[in-house]
Image (cartoon, rainbow over all chains, first blue to last red; front, side, top):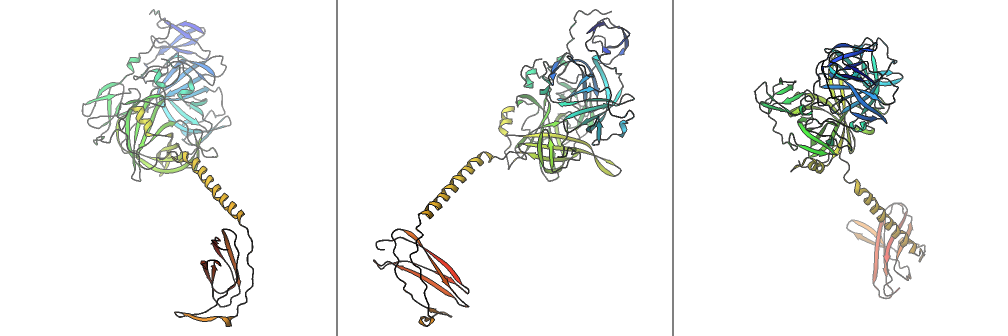
Length: 225
Length: 379
């Protein structure tokens, strides 16, 4: 846990996770980066759009027996609706950055791979829905190919984003309900590997009240707002 | 520099996540949007135009004047608790297939669990959830183009049922996707009652050939009308006709008892046969060879048929109790025809107890005549 101050407005800025290099100040929306023991301003971020997501920074839950806490978020607009990638801090964890992708009741828990069997020069344009794709000897199939525009972000993040930034993303699935998403934003494709989950699998501790619904309307024991 | 005292997370304004009211860009009428930030399409209730919500305005996407006149069995904006989850009906779509059938899809929403569809067809209801994965063939290939005789989906096995093209006929309310009246998609359905797996494909063209651009799979479960009626507090429900697509066999419960009854009757019938055949004496009461001399026969005529008749009095048979008698005759015939008549006459009363006869044509006749008889007063 690292406690700092926003270089722009001086408000407290906390870095909870070892993977977090960037943070968005929730008061002035300036994004800062950790650089040689100090924080450097990167720029101002846009306002997030209220998309009715039931999750929030600070929401905690459990996946496969591991407790997690949401500490960051990147919001995308895929043209067919909004999509959130929630950055997770997992207790006693040594794995790569963990994310919870979420929209409209669908949840994908993934971990960023530092390296995979995917070729560095794999082209986004060469992929088609329905084709097979091997990731480390694991056979996947391309399910969705989309281009998402980054709207904004909040909290701590392992990498930065800029508005007007279009992320070409390929979602893959396999017969074991495993899920992989490949982000072609950078020069080399970045692979996130994980699984498909439903709301009840997350064991969330609290959720937001939205559209006139309250936590008890989810029909899950012990869920509060 | 701003000073902030509060170190905890600044809470987001939940009050802002509520319904919003807009003006229709086509007719200027009020349009109520129940799920701003989620809905990608909303239909104006006045002019019928399909609109696209943005943050502050509605954009005109498709003009469609035909009003939604279908009966809303679950009215728009009705709330209910189904399977322990509170849902709100936010949109209704009526679709038809290329076989002349049509059905209604009620889009219900819960912000935690997402959207579900209650599909009503001929009074039968299916609770449908779109899943992220696809169906796989038995050798783990994705059924991308929708067709496979057998499918593994959502941890269950399904069998192919039917395929058709679904066209959007009419809509009302709002939807999280781009609604186009007249949009046609290829649908394949698989069954494992009470479950159903549905693949809905979007097709595109490339090099003159059509190919699948999207393959969306949903899991459906049969829901009895009573459950829907109770959940949404509905006064009336559409009458059920025939059977539902994934309706479980309503006679399944009776099957066990039907088998039980059949087994009992079978046992009873078998027992009767065994017991009665064991009680038979199987005693031979007569065994004779009768030499028949045709010269002793009387020539008779019946219409155009001529035949020889003979009488033969054989003797007596003694019976002690009610029993069956089997007469077995063995007669060589060649281009001939014989008719035998067996008379049993009670010696005491002189009454004809029974007569029975059988005919037989060319060939050797080894025949049997069964007579049931009881001793009566005499023997």
